[in-house]
Image (cartoon, rainbow, N blue to C red; front, side, top):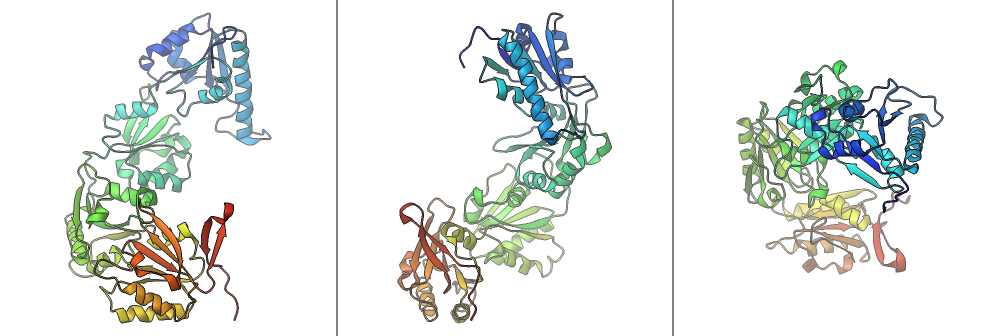
Length: 501
């Protein structure tokens, strides 16, 4: 807003993490220019923000303590905790507005940064659109904690995730597993759940603890060794950068990871975390290329037709103490690497090597979601590839599934050297299905060349199908409906109820 000379000016002043020497020059200037200095505190009246700025306060400053009505205790407010806090913020903003309307300049003090998990933002949202306002950034506790640990927080292409410890434990675990580096704020009573989340995410050994960074009473250490009863609110958990980190001493293992059908949006948090934690990535070159390159991580791409050799190679690495991710498109247990790894791992000398499977979004479900809900009732999944089983077996299974009126998801329909199976499958299915049966053709679903079309079984052209296409053939109950503005959207769905005979 343009400055109104009849009103005062509002400053949101970041004071940094606690050490008064980390207050910026601009913050000092704003405090000096202020007529009113406001700060939040609990009902005991002590304010960390005020204590940081105390050397810059003058006798002629008007002080406005903004005392929370409730912190961790219960309240009898009819709106509960949230209602009590909303009422408090409205009242506090009104008090500051009265000063601003009188032409006084108001500096609201905030530990750390004013717009980073700070109470100042509640004043900002209520006042900044009404008065000339400047926010002065401050050093956050995140930066202070990393500095006190003396370890890089993020490097290169790493991702930093900042989380409140008040999240549910399962949500914390998922996010901690998926990121490179992390800081968890707001510990205190949440510490046991945060510790449990780090353990579930397999990252407890990496976690560091920082208490009251840059303040008196500062404490740092390995989070796993911290007594939960000793943890105050002003502490954080830190997962530092993994670049150049010493690998934790552990027994080698193989984790077979599903990458989903295409792109990072289809990757689960668990899969993302396993890829980040792996020392070696093994897989078909096309799939290895989908894994972000990480410093120190070794990559072992290979041809698509050497599943057993690839599995043996990965298991040998694990026997050497390496943590190995074998990557697979879609879900690794659906026509993919999980069974190949387990087959080799079930024999000597690999029986003792730990093997885990991390699921992924499979192509059938991805294509179905784009088309509507064709898999809404019972369905069968069949691979049309005769590289690992005779065509006669495939044909028998197609007839059986078609005779049972199951929706069919057909994987591996064709390749450069194998182009006749789609036509054969269509002819077999037409023995049991109407030519008007809807067929979803999903190609490169989730990828840059995504194409999803609906044709009729009698019109299915094998020339329109390649190895990157999955087919979903409807049952006798599958519906095709045009909806949306002008009927421009064609959706396919199979009812959940099946008619009685």
